[in-house]
Picture 1 (cartoon, helix red, strand yellow):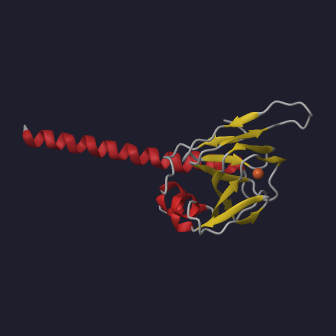
Picture 2 (tube, rainbow, N blue to C red):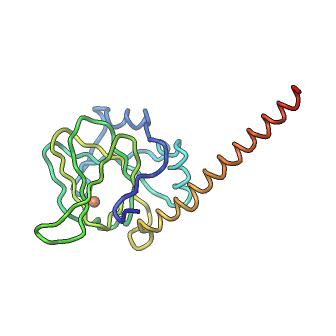
Picture 3 (cartoon, rainbow, N blue to C red):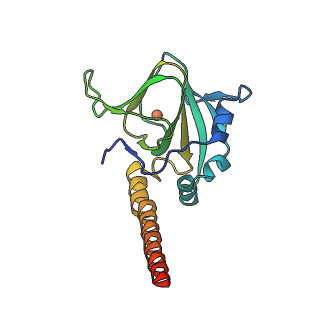
Length: 191
Ligand SMILES: [Fe+2]
């Protein structure tokens, strides 16, 4: 388990409605914590099982953060957010996200390699930075009502693992058992 980020074991989030918003020339973008951002109606996310499960437990708002070509968002920890979930929107861009553990002038980094639609639990309280080398980078992100003192990366990671994954696994197990029982019943009928 990484202290910085964790790719969630959920299907990719590819929403036509989300794409219609972010690629619409009439969409209004506004400054937000040194990014350019647009809010995303919560209904767009609630159509997805995982985002819906999460919203029932921890209320959040959603938005897309945009970074223009040849920009850097320098080393920082977030002011309020303890944890978030990020999902990259497919655009032609070359960008890099790094975490670090030490403040020295020379230090090692850990890279988070996003790919479109994947969802990453992100520890906003570990120092991180983004370099957008080329193209426009767009990231769907969520902001919980609970701040860094109320909801941490590890809290949420454990909750997802012990509740969402476990329930999903149990449901799959039940479905496979029902399938087995059905197929046995079918076999009996035909024999
Ligand atoms: Fe940040």
